[in-house]
Each structure stands twice: as C-alpha cells, then as structure tokens.
Image (cartoon, rainbow, N blue to C red):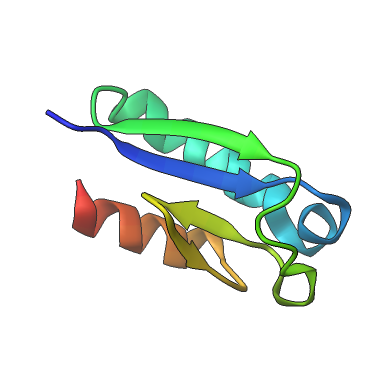
Length: 78
C-alpha cells in the first residue's frame, strides 16, 4: 500500500503563519496512521511565501493551510 506523502514548509513566513500547528497536528496523525502517512518538513515549497503556510500532499500544493483543512484533506485520502 502506498503511503500518503505530506510535506509542510517550515520556512520563516510559513512558520510565522502557523506551520508549527500543522506540524503538531501531523505528528499526531502520523502516530495514529503511521502505515498510511509519510510526513516531512521542507524549508521552501515553490517560493509561495505570500500564501503561507504551504503544504504539499502527494505533489499537490495547498496554500494558506490550517490544521483543520489539513486534517480533513488527509483523512479523505487515507
């Protein structure tokens, strides 16, 4: 079974706009669904800082991400 790859930008704009909360939420989800989710952080995702925080899920980019939106997207896809 292929795992869902979730990448959260932790560059300064993303971090200041809420990436820490996304990382905390992802850590919780990864612990619960570790066989279904591969999680990592990056320092920049395609220089979209004005739309921070940025998340990439299986290559698809999501802008202005919130923990609730992230959780909803992931739970629909696993």
